Image 1 (tube, rainbow, N blue to C red):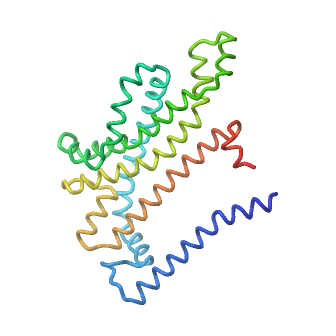
Image 2 (tube, rainbow, N blue to C red; image 1 turned 45 degrees about the horizontal axis):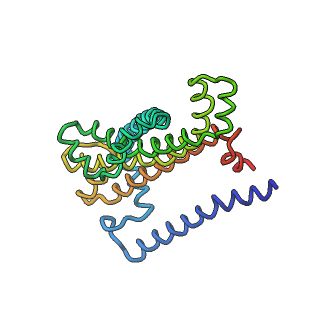
Image 3 (cartoon, rainbow, N blue to C red; image 1 turned 45 degrees about the vertical axis):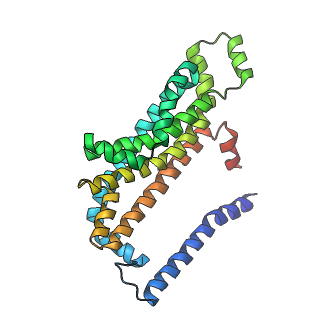
Length: 265
């Protein structure tokens, strides 16, 4: 069984790495063979060289984007869960407030960011957009989870005379936890997308210092290797955010929820 698991893990991680190596090798060879200039298409080695050379600038921009993304995620997670619990418990509140949440979600964020820049400074706009694109998956999944409680368990709590606080904390929130964590997994990477969209809007307005701004600045100056290096950092950041949330979800669910227990087998 262990050898089968090891074989599965090797295939799960080895095959994507092998494909990535083949694509990067073909890319490197194509740039060299056709003598493509760096301002048109940099090679992977040129991108790594630019990342190392421009690290003092890119690292500052990386920190700015990371801070804003994490702050937006934290606000969206806390606000989405709190409001989701309320709307999941009180039908009248859902009927009153949920349509406004839907309106904010379906309005294109790239249209909202430039308008927000009229009234707020660029860092605040980046934080707001990261929040706006993240909160709805958390809110929606929390509401669904709060309404997914097993009726037999609810009857058991009624039998023992559990008060409202115990019913919420010990039954409904625990039932909703897998749904909430799913909302986190969806919303976490979206926070980075929202931050990037706002940074692009702020960059075109003459303000900004995040990685998206560096991409715009680099393309204007035909420093394409630096633009690709900034894009690489954004991709790595998104991957780290996603798998960190996946890991935390697994730790919280592995002892009792079937979705996480199956991964242990």
